[in-house]
Amino acid sequence: MYRMGISKITAVIFVTVVLTFFVIIGLYYSQPKSSFAQQNGKNSDSKDSVNPYSGDLERYKQRIHEDSHFGFHSANYGNYYSYLNDLGVNWSREGMYFIWTLADAKRKGNFDFTFYDHEKLQANTPNNINIVVNICPFGRGGKFASEQEKDIYARFVEKTVERYGGGGSLGCAEKSPDCYKPADKQFPDNEVINRFKRNNTIKYWQVCNQLTDTCGGQDCKTDYAANFAEVQKITYNAIKKVDSSAQVLIAGDSRITEYPEVFKKLNGNYIDIVDIHHFGTENGYDVKKDIDYLKTSLRNSNYDLSKLKFWITETGTYSGKPLGDDMAREYQYQNEKQQARGLLKIYVSAFARGIDKVFWAWGLMEGFGCTCCIFDYTGLIYANAGVNPDGRRSNCSNPDYDLGYGVKKLGYYTYKLMVEKLKYSDWTKIEAIHESDGIYIYIFTNKQNGKSTWVAWNDSGSPKTVNLVLNTNTEDVRITQAIPAHDSGKEVTDYHRDFKEITGTISPTSPKRLSFNLDGTPVFIEEVYKVSIQRLPMAPPPPSAARPSPEGFDDISAKVSEFRTLISRQTDAEKIKKATEIDIQSREAFRAGDRGLTLKLLNTGIDYLKGNDNVNLNR
Image (tube, rainbow, N blue to C red; front, top):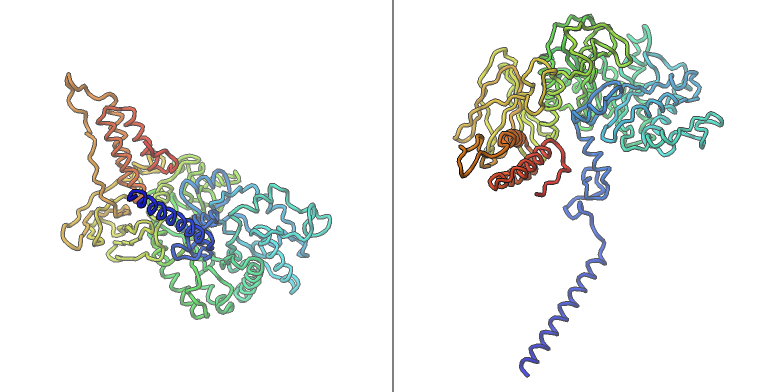
């Protein structure tokens, strides 16, 4: 009797619990569901909250690529994009300009985009590259002959943006095989159409290259500002009419004193991004004076600086000795180390001045094609004594200078290291903490882990002891020279090992201070996690009858050394954690005498830390 009563009560409770469970489940699934972003307090439709869990992975990846701050301005030739991928660069200002008078020679509105279609197809731009292009009514100066021509040019801009900026109509008024008028047979073939529909459609348009591209002859002295301001306004309005999300740059290749008059005539409108160009020697890197001048001029012309971005779409310094240039300036010889130092200084100081994107020019490979001017020497890859991309030899260099077609200069490797060290920075939190006595120090903050990276260099001409106050929670630092320890890039054999690390001393008192010797080579100083790892013996134990010397120990020792070096250079907290797990497993395998598994684990860890995120991390 007693047992039966307990069983009935238990059964009633069980049934009640089950029914309650299903009611709760039913209520849950009857409610509208929020996205991952909404559950975390963010609106998934917000432009600033795109994440890979919101269902729009392609948009998320595009945002990551757009956030990159590193670019190149170069003609599309050879392995251009593969080099950009190797460097970690996601921005390219193309060498192809959209010119109205080239697509409409008679200025009658009969646009012919055949040439541009071919260039777009040949470029084969990867999806991870953001494209910036120039668009202008004239090539090297010109004027509108009538108001009608201004209207035709505006239509040219609209059709160009529709065709190459992701518009569904491809800029066509007619259906295939025609496009703009019956029987013109300009409808693009499927291969070209598919290229247009890729994720890297053009969203950044620069109005001409120089402020004098819209005038000619003597009138440039008096009318350039009015002419250019009018073209900027026409182009801006036509672009925004088709694609309101597109961004419009003003021309950047002009004397700094020419801009105030143009700004006045634009009166606070028709510009999204202000561009300047900056070239010079190793120590002529700082753009602060020019940026301050432009900002003052913009404020005086009713611009809201908080709504503008500032870019440098052309900058560079050289190696070798330019023989002459359009500015009739005499340049002194610079070696590869000087070019590499100047490269880092240009980028870091520009970011510290609030510049959003910086593009190296011209460009990846030497041989711009001028009369042996500075632009023939700013490339980061040799080109057989100045062979231009189109195959013409400029004879700007001698065999003693040029180290062979395709040989990378030191600056190439410095650029790559710079991107690796700074690509995850919070670009709103860059601070100049020392700019005096020849010592320059800037601090960047990693968005992923909150760790700091300092960039420092010494322009004083002699080594100096630097004392740097660290963050209160800094555990340890790694100091890496920003230039490979060689005289030329041709000598670089191991990218991961050829950057010398130097030592410093951290005071035990609070606040912690780092003291180290800084010579003429710039350095990266990174906060790193202290990884307490019991090291494998770096020499085999003495052999004995009971325990012979481990077979293949030298191979394992070399792998351990490489693996530990890669861990020490890593700043990504998640990668450090996973690599540490692999390290522990490799030590266990080593102690167990399993040489094969030890090598397998070490090779897996090395592969992972070198950038292969698809390796099998399971034992």
